[in-house]
Image (cartoon, rainbow, N blue to C red; front, side, top):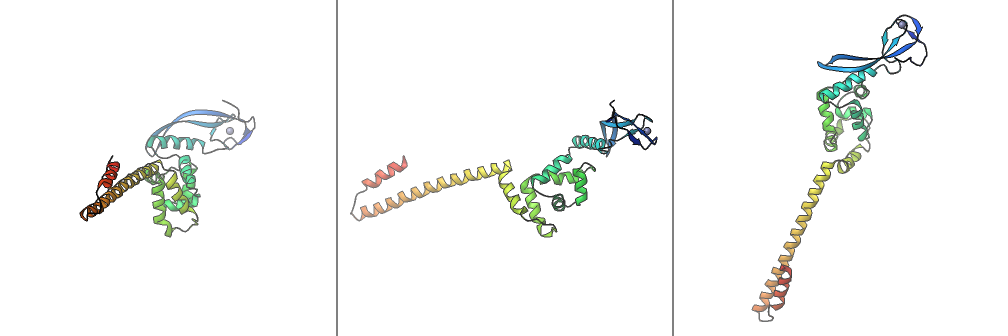
Length: 223
Ligand SMILES: [Zn+2]
């Protein structure tokens, strides 16, 4: 136990100015039916022994519980949701409107005040893919009320650059195009030879020339 700042605070329980000591407690609880055991921090009034949440960060213990719950059921953590939104350069208002929840709800989720549903988590995880998120944005764009200047361009740039899977697809596509170009060149070459042969044959038939040069060219290209 450590004294908190050696500074006396008013205790609303015993109505005295008292010193407070930090207390760590292992506590078990259930969130949405899921059992959680968390290490909580309280501040104990040295006068009446009543326990209080942190005075500077009253939601500390709740945040710890939510983090453990998120890990156990596999939903995104508040910090990950904030990161996802910031990766797209969107404000709380913009991102909330695109995914169809209120600004205040998203704010509370990002700050760890409320837990989001598994249903919303599925939406958020789909939004992690810039291609999916851009599709969603384009579908909803004409119904959105906020200002989205530059968002479309930004999302397109992110789709082209940031997704490894896209890079892989682009790589495959380039290889396919390159292969197709090689085959086209080969087809042109064969066509030219056939054309020359055909003309050469015509010349032979007409008795103007023999085919020795034509045969040499074909030999070179065929090697
Ligand atoms: Zn007290």
